[in-house]
Image (cartoon, rainbow, N blue to C red; front, side, top):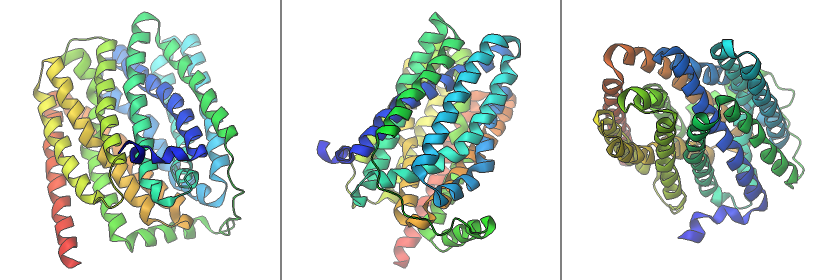
Length: 406
């Protein structure tokens, strides 16, 4: 079981990718936690929390389609290396700006978050589509993607916890600075990789509209892909943005501090990490769509229970279980897309998948922030939990219909 769970580590390039990204993502989650805490501490506005998430994700949505085309046209490795260098420069600018323009901290954070969102629009399609090139045995792709998710959630577990400590003992500037430093290992490990010379891509002179249309037509022709994209879009808009409200739970519901926020975000990362390792341990014959539906039910029930608990240890238990189920929404959907998409469409289809998430989640964050202002955060998250159950029921019904037609 253990050998199967970590089978992708047999590949040297994937090991380097995993190590470098692990360090970088810890810094990223430290910065995300610091941004949420600084924004809410300075503004006391739930809506501004939504704006800060919107500022990062919406620019990604605007450029991710072009980012997918770039990933299909050019070397994904070189694109990823370039975006990591640009992300390092953005982190340095953010750190220096907080030091010298503290009085404008909120707007500085929002503007530079938007800059990062643009960079991510090119980074994410290249990074996700490159994973397939890092494993020699393509049957190991689901395992590699699940481990990639576990890496992200390990970072989400450790990063916010460190951020909470650093925010209390030092300052938000130190958090931002440590994120800048975290990009050095990922750039170094990328430079150590030995990838085969990429084949010339024949579509480098194609019309952009034509390339995008080809990808859309391909998605329409594949029910196993378009059904997952519809599922992800609804979950991304109505349920996944619950994380926008964790600073409010930390400060107003549990009467805590930055450390409390770090603990909440950390246990969400822990639950998601366990969920990702569970997915990595699944056999290649596992019915991923069925697992997705079941785990979404687990997510919805646990989220609803978390919303109503005011005792922190019990709330942490339920949100950990919820995060376990939540992990499937992103990891399995990503895996299903990557398994069924051929190489020539991979960057564009993944960019459409990422565009859906990076559009629905920031819009959902604005909606959740506004709704919670009127009905409270606990009622808002309770409704999100029930919506997850409804969405899972409809998706499960769809899977039953597909099985009957086969």
